[in-house]
Image 1 (cartoon, rainbow, N blue to C red):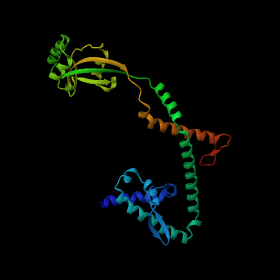
Image 2 (image 1 turned 60 degrees about the vertical axis):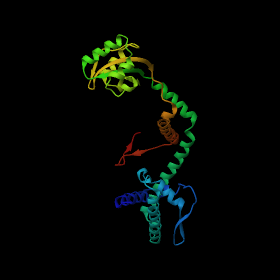
Image 3 (image 1 turned 30 degrees about the horizontal axis):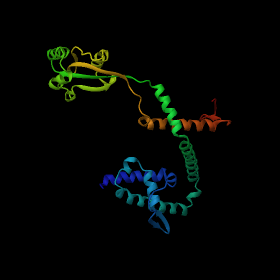
Image 4 (image 1 turned 180 degrees about the vertical axis):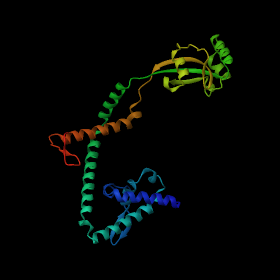
Length: 280
C-alpha cells in the first residue's frame, strides 16, 4: 500500500471514529468473533473490526481487506486509549460531551425506529402496487424497427434506393454496400424510439409505412436509405428493472407516513432566531 493510500484510509477511519462510533457499535460482523487486541484487559473483537469497516465509504471498503484490517485495529486501539484518558479526566461530566451524547442518542433512536418501519413496510404487495401505478403513469412509447444502408455519396444512395425498390433484397444490399456498423446484420438497427436516433433520420424513419423504403436521407454520418420493418408500443420495464428505484420511492413514502403519524394530535410551535413565533 502506498503512503497516499495509507493517508486516505487513515483519514476515512478518523472520520468514522469522530462521527460514527455510536452507530458502529450496533452493527454485527460475521464469522468467528476472534479477539484482535487487548488493552488493559479490554478486548477488541473481530465483530468490532467488521462493524467499523462497514461504516467506511464504499471506495475505502473496496481496498483489499488485508490492507484495511490492521489500520482499523490500530484505530480502535487508539480510540480505547483516548477514551481511558478522557474518562480519567472526567470528560464524561463535560456539558459539551453530554450534549453530543444526547444528540447522537436521539439520531440513533430515530434511525433504528425508521429502519424498523421501513423493513416492515417495504413488502412485495406494496412494491407490486407501486409498480402498477408506475406503469399506468408512464404510457408506452412508440418504437419502430428499421434497417438502413449508409454510404458517403448521394448518387450512390439514390442508386441503392432504386435497386431495392426494384426487388433487390435489402439485407443483401446492406451487407454489400453499407459502410455502417450494422452492415453485417443486413442493416438492421433493432427497435428504437424517436429520440434515440439523429432527428433527421428519426423523422423520416417514423413516417414510413411498414416495409416502405425511403429516399436518401442525409445526416452527419453520410447518406442513408431506410426501410421500416416493424412498429410497436414499447413494453413496460419489468418489475425487477425498476425495483431499486421503486424501493427507494417506497422507503421515502414510509418515512413521510411515519412523520405524518408522529405529528397527529401534537401541538408544534416554532420560532425564528429573534424568538418570534412562526405561523405554521
